[in-house]
Length: 294
Image (cartoon, rainbow, N blue to C red):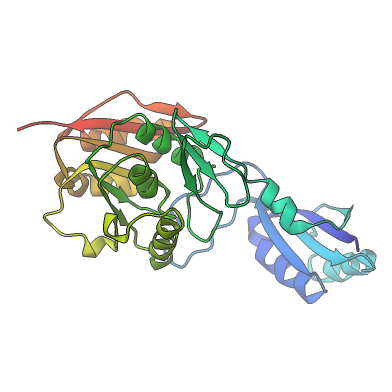
């Protein structure tokens, strides 16, 4: 069976209404995408942000009367956005999705591999991780920057704090690379569940991987390594807390930062840390440093 995909170049103001109308007219699914490479950062609680230029992709059965769909839309949308239609051949969709996720190498030792792929190097450090509900599979530049940093360190006997853990990829990578214990913190309960499940999948002893909501993190928590891959705004606000959690002489890595945000984030941490020059990947950056000794 083939499908017909109707594609609109919409504006943010009418995207949601157009989505609802397409579903009422028989669309099997409707997908909204960024149509102008416009990043959307730090939405408010309960917000579903859309891009100013939003591409709408509506999937219909092959026998759908697209002309009738367009005519019906035109009665409710006098300024109907430009559109096109394409035929999509049926395929093994699960296999096609899986093909997008292949083993990835970070640094010298670490590989992140989906469960359906054979590890390229059986002697390497292998982190088994499938795409899931929580952020963090290694495909995003900020995650890659953090994994490469962890791979460069001697983590033997270290305690690691992963603040904003998402899938737990950074905490679990640290443990596989030799850390003694990792504390994974996130305000999303789903992220904490995903972290626990991924720890089990990778054979991590439950006593070595602790999960906590931010308010559950002990006030006297002190670690050797702190890593936070979130966003510039929260990183600035968290600087006193993350500094307090990092022992003197300990290390910190901060990511989720756009290259133009490095100076302002670095300034928030310089009272406590010697911050190195930022490391860039595409438009993203990582800041890392060493906690000053008293």
